Image (cartoon, rainbow, N blue to C red):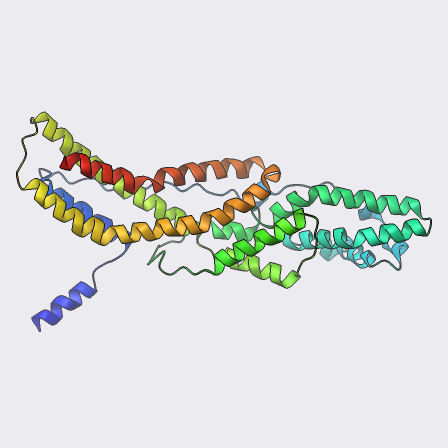
Amino acid sequence: AVWTGVLLLAGCADDSPDARFERYLGRLERALDASGNKTPAPDRFSLPTLPRTGQMRLELAGSTLDALDFLALSGCAVQVTIGKRNSSLGRMASASQRLLLELEYLQLAPACVQRLREEGRRELAELLDETWRQKREQLPALIFNATLGGTEYRDFWQPPARLGDYPAATSSGVLSALEALNGSVRQWLDGDYRFDNLAFELLLSEVAKGDGGALLKAEALQASWLATTDALLAARLQHHRDQGFIRNPNEKYVLKNVVLRFFIGDLQPWLAAVDRRRQRLLPAVRELEQLLADALPPPYRDWQAQRDQALTDWSGAPRRHVRCIQALRD
């Protein structure tokens, strides 16, 4: 019965990242004989917040198609497209649907332009061709509004209330969706304007379920806890210097055991899993940012710089901590 109770208590131990860091820090305090001074709780690093979609949306100039009588295009497949985009529903379409309407125009308009020229209706042909060129120039901005600047990517970067067992619960679905979207964007920017409406919307919905925000939160959490732990180690190292490096002979032995059990054994697997997730998730996001680099608006660029700088600093926290341990043990 006693052993059953012990096992049940062990099973109820809190394995959240915060609890693991707290156990490690507490053990270090005891191992280093911190003179009864409790190390303060870590300062939580704030996460860079992606601006609202309305603050990032790129406004695009209208075209003469807005006032065009689409009946004049009878016989052209693009007539239906222009009718849809000029309708009340078309004008209120989401950024993703607006992108697909413009891709449809880019795909269908050249055939209509050629037909009109052959019929001698050059003025209307030139109007459609001029609009086609305008839409082609606007394509990176249209793609940005529908992807990086859209609600789905904002949801992707939304941090969860709790990390739970992150990143163990993540799947490859969001990675596949990001890669597929990047492939479509490359295709469109290269002049192939074909698309699958339903597939595109499904990919965006998969991105919205992604874990960009959870990754940011995990990276910030590890950095904040390890910064506090590093401060404890640095204070102990300064104490040794002040005392002429006279120390308790058991300190190195106890410190080694604490590090082996609570850092390498308990925390390191979680830290490594977070790092692996970062290395898998971020390249696909950054690839799209690179494809649309010339279209990124200033609010997004500012957030992007803050995000990348924070991730660079936070992801280096485990290496800095190992150096602090080595300095104290030497």
